Amino acid sequence: MYTNSIPSALLERGTKRIFTKDSHIFKTGDSIANCYYIISGTVKIYIDHKNGRRSVLDFISANNWLGELSVFCCETDVKENKVLQEVVCLEFEIHDLRKLSKENSEVSFYFASYISNKLLNRSSRMSENLNFPLENRLASFILEYHHNLVYNLPHVDVSEYLNVSYRHMLYVIKHFCKLEILTKQKGIGYLISDIEKLKQYLE
Image (tube, rainbow, N blue to C red):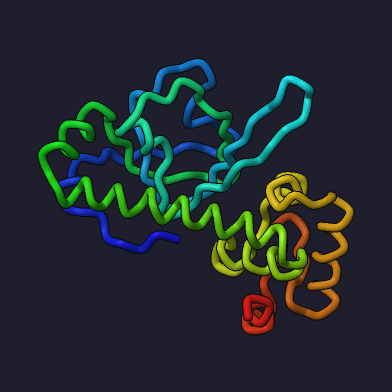
């Protein structure tokens, strides 16, 4: 998660927006006119391939941007996206941010730092996928994407993102429940019962 504060010159240009669960922030085929800073909620980013398979590329949550690359380049392929948990965000006009980035070095450096951090995190995740067991990777994922100690993202999406089978995913979830790290709650998801024990998988 990127934690550097947004420059005030940037923050004051945002307009509050809310996207409901199962809605789409961007639509495939549309040109990108706005980008978004996520305050709360989660968005799934994915690609549907011509062979019928789907690749989940990322989950965008609080303190992250969506569409920010279009401030600095023209994105021709808009990736599929779906709101998994209601999103509260700030909406910014791309052309306005382009102009601001040219005029304000603090804003330019902020975006450069954010995008660099994003690339480093993706490289780290690729390395973890190759070298760490699912227990460690899933623990890290749950700690990042839980909301008030409740984790409820779809197993199918997360298994695709972590590049493991759905069956393997369920096995580890059940293992965490058996260890009383997670507690399944009908209609809600999974409650993190022992967050300290879950954090041990990061060591």
